Length: 423
Image (tube, rainbow, N blue to C red; front, side, top):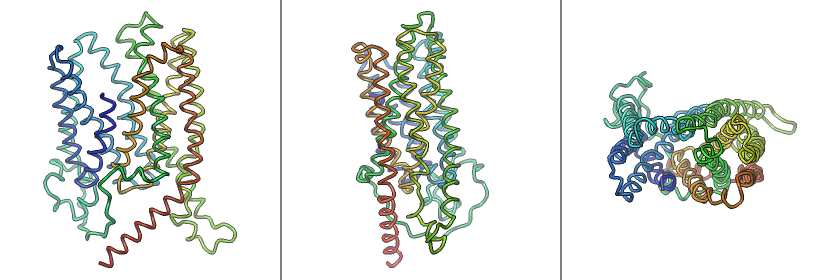
């Protein structure tokens, strides 16, 4: 239920933040998260329905901050630096599920399960206060007229981030941004990237969702705390993988940009090559992804058989590290390119991304124990290998069809802006 609402809620909050602003919606989501955690800490054990309801509300508050955060990245970064920004940003939302069980295991063992939700209440409340005190508004349609003229909800109490005064700028003509995020599904190139990201996320959750149960059974010497510590392997892989992948994305973009600025034989001038239509954006973002997918497929198959054969604990932990590092790289590559393709709807497209990948992940998580009982641990993760390899041909589809639809959207935006200027 948590994962379902984790996918659905950003479809509301993401588009709202694309129009209302990042700062007030971020604060609202964190407030909802804080209040729901208080309710979960106090819920009677006899009211299971209330526990489920509060978990849904909790997911609605927490997951939406991912889409809004991606919107901030789209607001403040250019294509040349977006990969690095997104790589650092993604460390938070994707590593959280990996390090959370470490904290949860310790709290549960020593203070009981309710202490988990009190811990989350404190953490979410601190984030809420930080947003109110320090976070400036980044949505250009809300701050283009100058920070001092913005309504109070768009101004931080302590303006230390971007504290240098910004010059007042005249309002620029802007194409209308669709409010309905479901319209993004009408773009075939975006759909392909959504599926690629969802397959990578599904395999990741297929591994992380079974760590507690499988490790407690296969390695009975582990207790709740040490089982929680086992999550650090995949979490560490995601931290390193996300950071390194972000740097690589920026490097690849710069490399392709320099190549595009070199005239080729028969070209009348350099300007023709540096146009949006001529730049191989999809290739610049996705060139390394086939290698990530092959590594993840091999690591998943090895992970399953390592657990099946009950080998040394070090082996599955090393394979977890590999799975974490390449799965986050796959998701970051696809997510960064999606923001590049629809920069004015960065929160909305990230919400669509959450919807698809959380839905597929929820389906797999709900049946994975049945699959393990039916075909065994080894073959279950061979199946995961097959799921990851499904993304391989889609990469080449994205590179092939992407430029056509990207150019079409670019020309439509230019025509709409021209009409606005004429009016």
